[in-house]
Length: 266
Ligand code: ATP
Image 1 (cartoon, helix red, strand yellow):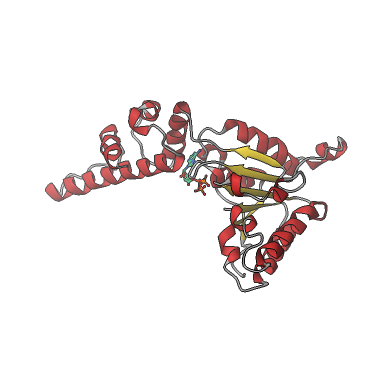
Image 2: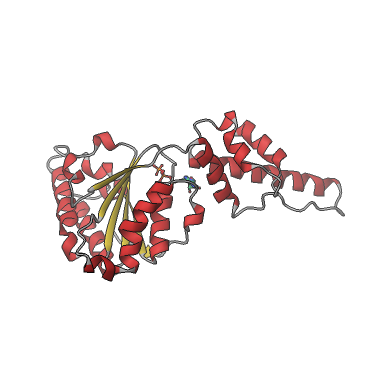
């Protein structure tokens, strides 16, 4: 209970997110600008959703984009994993849900991110009435949006089909957004975003790498694993050459050949 609701502004930036442009626009209009320029929205009397649900295959950037939204808005970020709230004694889960929302209110503007949110909503009728009470508590908190100005709730799930329809109504997780596997072009953009933090040689053609057959159906997480393997290959090569000849140390640069080795592994 103590750990849940730990808040800070994340350091993930838009530039760290490859592709997902339409989602980015949506969140910019519906969260970032609302936090930065609330007067415009008030003047127009806009009544917009404060609850969003991201769904889609694993490793495609749901968590990443939620963090980037908080960073861009200069808002606090609270990361809750649905199943962690379930691992509680009777009554504690409901209290944990209340506590999390109350923390979010005290540190607004705030993005409250519920990862694997389906875990909280699929217990209805199971385990005595534990699941019902937990779901009810979540609904009460989601419905109280008027009392929590500056708090935006983003849920994430790989299993939209098992979500209880009650949480998907307007005013709760009212805006449902799909986060798909990256397209061929987006794979290149993701690799470029990942390369920002690594010494990748300038002649490595990351767009071509993203287009190659071996990367077919890769998620962002798979591309991140590929980038890491390539970095490992570069490191191994440097360590090998410095063993052979101690007076000559190669600079650490990730080259095309390292990506070729990595592709075989990932
Ligand atoms: P899950 O459903 O498994 O929780 P997720 O959709 O929340 O997955 P993330 O945690 O955001 O996925 O992504 C995992 C990792 O994959 C990120 O930390 C990042 O390294 C990489 N990644 C995924 N998508 C992208 C993207 N669009 N741009 C850059 N990196 C990405």
